[in-house]
Amino acid sequence: MPLETPARIVTELAERGYNADREAVTLLANAGDPGRALERALETIDDDALKLSATHVRRTLDGADDGATAVDSVAETTDVNESQATTESATGNPPASTGTNDRSSGNDGGSTPVETEGYRDAAGADDGGRSIDPSRHEVEVSGDMTGQSTGTGEYSDFVAVFRDRYEKLSGQLRGRVNHRPTDALEAMAGGSEAAIVGMVSDIRSTASGHWLIELEDTNGTYPCLVMKDREIADLVDELLFDEVIAVDGTLSDDNGDGDGILFVDDIYFPEIPRTYQPSTADREVSAALVSDVHVGSQEFMADAWSRFTDWLHTEEAEHVEYLLLAGDMVEGVGIYPDQDEELSIVDIYDQYEAFSEYLKEVPGDMEIRMIPGNHDAVRLAEPQPGFDEELRSIMSAHDCSIHSNPSTVTVEGVSVLMYHGVSLDEVIAELPDDKASYEEPHKAMYQLLKKRHVAPQFGGHTRLAPETEDYLVMEEVPDVFHSGHVHKFGYGKYHNVLTINSGCWQAQTDFQKSVNIDPDCAMAPIVDLDTLNLTIRKFA
Image (cartoon, rainbow, N blue to C red):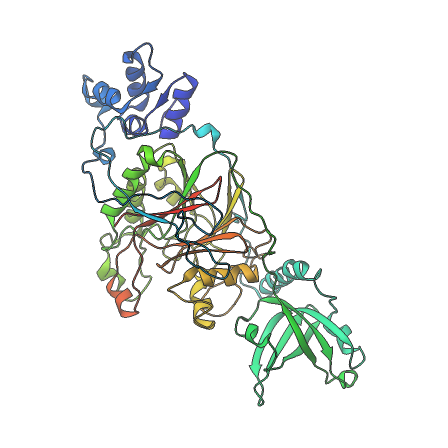
């Protein structure tokens, strides 16, 4: 059989009753003829051996009588970084865990995850690796609209996508209020109790400092007044245009005259139920969550990335079997003013070629899933489909799978909503600092969970593409919400949903300096899928 990928090598070994070190698999995969290299290694292995070691494979390749099995040097490790910190045990059920040092994080509280520095395995070390059985991997994907785009930008397309948004989110709210359509409210007697589920079409303050909110359903609009002295007035600060909410209250006495208004007593968001209990994996297995690699930038942190991938080859990382990348694999071209002055690779396809080479440093038996971001070579409007065939052919390392932005990737029963995060700019710009900021990006992500939509506001910084349905609605509650884009690290739990913004692998650029962005770099959150505990690995 052709052995183009490490995963196929592992499968072939398993079928023959052998296990293998990660480094051994990588050495075989990088040989000029992987099939021949594997056969030579198995012919010369000890009869009682059940595991193929890196030392044995290296010796086999070095003894080859021609260049057909020469090993690509990218797979070799060279240095040992002795400055790693000690790792504390991660236990309990906080947003992330460290043992005993609890520290508040976000609305639901929590404790600080372990932070350790990664290290590079010594070259030729035979006992630093571990092996994985890819046949145990279980991945399902939902919400991937790649190949499903039908929107043409016509007015009718926009009507269809907003109607679909309203229907999906109103369905989540109607069980909490006695919804009446707007035209039915107009016919009700003044002083009646009433409720409406609608899309926010306007928010403005009155001369007296109260808040007037226009809510729209499929029949029309209706004005709703939130008095400034009510406790719920603080919730108005969290509202964005085009999100779907529900309100209840009392109709004004003149409602029957056609000039009525609803005096609001309560505001309801689609929300994550407070009783939500996330799913966990049935075995000890972990996933690394990273984003914003930005290969092609002069500030791409190649050494830190190699320290990360070298660590993945060690026994300490033996349970890290999945790598989930939330967009911006490359720096792109023409994304911001004078970007060309900060590029190390000026051609977009060459950037993807380089990224694919860096991806080869990842152990070959890991399952890799990724989505695009705003720097990637796909349309800017969300939802963003996965890469076209030309880019997929470049990104062939590991048989990695590329899904749309957003997509929900369910890994061994744990659903991970992957969204690159462009709308976080909008949320942070519109909401008060205590509810959304770049320093605590997970709080902005909490707002998206609360609204059950990853990009609720249309017409601002976030470009939205009209499709036959709204792929940006969170119809199901995720167990983990993973995002990036803002180049800041943050984590927490919102109603038991583990929420992570994973920072970046790009040092501060001149453009970022000009807009006061101080990035959090080279951090790899590791989520234990069987407990949802979190460990933060630092590689810079």
